[in-house]
Image: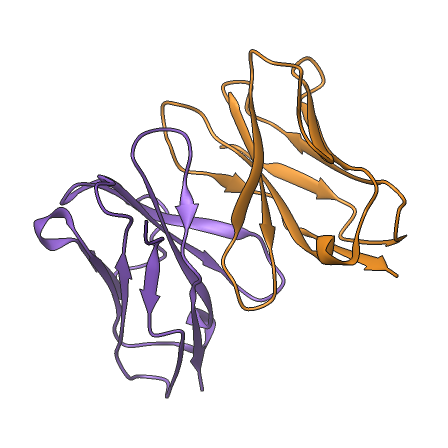
Amino acid sequence: EAGVTQFPSHSVIEKGQTVTLRCDPISGHDNLYWYRRVMGKEIKFLLHFVKESKQDESGMPNNRFLAERTGGTYSTLKVQPAELEDSGVYFCASSQGWPTQYFGPGTRLTVL
Amino acid sequence: GENVEQHPSTLSVQEGDSAVIKCTYSDSASNYFPWYKQELGKGPQLIIDIRSNVGEKKDQRIAVTLNKTAKHFSLHITETQPEDSAVYFCAASSGSQGNLIFGKGTKLSVKP
């Protein structure tokens, strides 16, 4: 069974540009989570989808971040416009139900 | 909201020795405590977890203990091997929210 996949693995962009990260959860997992780890700090929750609906988006830092999950399958996280403080590793996780979450390899975003 | 403290931030042990990583949490509603191992270039991998109705759980060389009264839980790795070298994260969750609250991580180095 394939695990959670994320694309791209790395992205380097200039401040002010737009970046879109993609996550493909484990097949059949209705729950999809986005997390972020900024340099040296803890992994922080961003938001949680149940199928195509946003269950909890309390961790989203501001309105420059937009997450979607069309059709309840893969999800995208768009950052527009990117700022320096957005640099970090973005993780996606999926689960069939609470509590066990399986993480993807992450996307390392660098904003110059 | 929930806060998870993790200590130590770095830990160096000799191969064959034991390693212990400790975490404390603040929210008494938390009832699920997973531990993740992150190797270089990979995403966090679940290695063991425990629910609040259990005091201890073992899986071969790793074990987790939970003290609900004191609100702390610990990861114990016995007979450490060089391949145990990684960053370990503790986390806490409650069924009402679903998202994980992580500690800042412990970088474990096992010297041959």
